[in-house]
Length: 166
Length: 278
Image (spheres, each protein chain N blue to C red):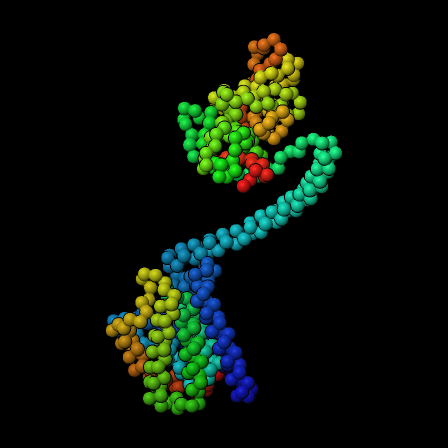
């Protein structure tokens, strides 16, 4: 029950942050991928099962809100959750370098995988253009990596607080 | 739960989630998946565009379900029809066997077994609309003079149209039964009255040589008589429209309308004896 409540709160918080506040607090359309950071965090702290399942649910939710190929984010976040979970207990989750490297690798994998699927299954004009470097895209990756330590710090603090109350 | 078991469970869940994701990617454009996606989107961000899309996909989804039900019903009726036809075919085989035996015993000529050759009408002269036309099949398709040309009616029956009067390698000329030079031995269906159907260069036929005492009236069906050397006996030709009052000494005359619709006649069937098929 405690675990379910934790995951539910986790899901609700990051959905709100990504899909609701993203519209208001972005800078020139650049907004960090908080969901990706959340999945990496879950992988580091909870292991493969929790990270991949939450990755799938987050991906499915995001796919529902987007006009890109349906299911592609569910697939990418599931894989990222699985591999992030493999490093559970192998990395010190409080080590900033480990956090930055993990999120950077995940971002590159996400971009590459997303582009590959969009390349194989093109959706027609107006859809995502695969394998194209854009300034906003690169900035988004950079911002995501930079905010990662803050998010990890906040999540560690929140986890301790939630554990105390639940 | 031990680490090993937990790891195995994680792997299994991973494979299931991957399969689910791939299934979603493959099924993304199906109406059902699109419907669910648009519905979730509408619940989160209610707007007119999303609502329209939901109704559109819900409509096509319902249409598909309806089509499946209709096809299933249609399939059922076709199965029944198929069973009926199989029974009829079985009876037909038995009748044919008996017919062969009787024909051999009585030493009578057998009815020719024919094969249908479908042909398109390639040329028609507007001034001679009810006299002849040319079809796009000829000697190369085993067509020869005096073969009957028929048409499939809406009720599935064949009706007489004409006979081949000239053949070329890839075409043939068909003289219609409505041609004024044509005369087909006919009988009034169910009344055993033998008479002659003469063409009038219109969609009407003049039915001549009707015995004076024959009970014939408008609405009677005219069919091919067994005396015809071209058409099979019993093939429908037309329907009596009127019986003429001016009688000659011995016979009555009637006017019949032909069954074949000359205006929409684009395709004809030539009944070719099987033994003459190349």
